[in-house]
Length: 252
Ligand SMILES: Nc1ncnc2c1ncn2[C@@H]1O[C@H](COP(=O)(O)OP(=O)(O)O)[C@@H](O)[C@H]1O
Ligand SMILES: [Mg+2]
Image: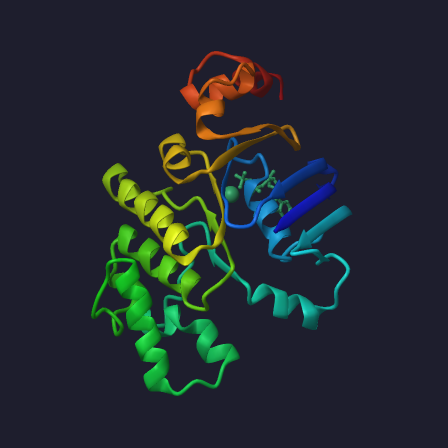
């Protein structure tokens, strides 16, 4: 479904991805873990065509999106839903306008139909009758849920989640994790979640891939990752303050 091949990306002399390969199967829930600044958000932006690699290809269902014009790219993007880091709701728009943003922008559906779809999406994330509320009046967990409702509103084939549990309390984090896995199951989407939260990774993933030093250094089922023999993976998943990750950080 998604295949990144031999990708390299450098920002002002700082190499973030190099010779990077990753393949995500149709219908799977892939979780990408890695330290802050490792390049997780950059990776998601490559998948949805918001960033282009310096070298390499990004194929979505067999189409290399690094080679298509903007019109084609916009069309392919319609297959994607994305929950941005921090939900990224528009503060001046109410919940209805936020969730239905793409419906208003890209379709001519009558208002009653749009309202119906929004109510349906809000219900799927456990919210009701908040259409006229502005984001400033919502709690952190509710904002994430509204962001989730927006991500699923256009019935995407692929959903990307950037740090879905960062900045909310562990209980609400647990609710969001369950919701992401539930939506993945019922909507039968291909999902990619990036996070540094291992509770979230184990809850959401069919497979987990660890991004470190510009590449995927390990990939496998949650069980396989828990039993990894790679010292970097082991330190990351256990949160051990001592180990190769901290030694590498001390050197820079
Ligand atoms: N648009 C950009 N311009 C310059 N540098 C960027 C840009 N986006 C990301 N970076 C750099 O790329 C690296 C990876 O960033 P990011 O993908 O946001 O990390 P994270 O894994 O925390 O999501 C960071 O060093 C960041 O400063
Ligand atoms: Mg990020």
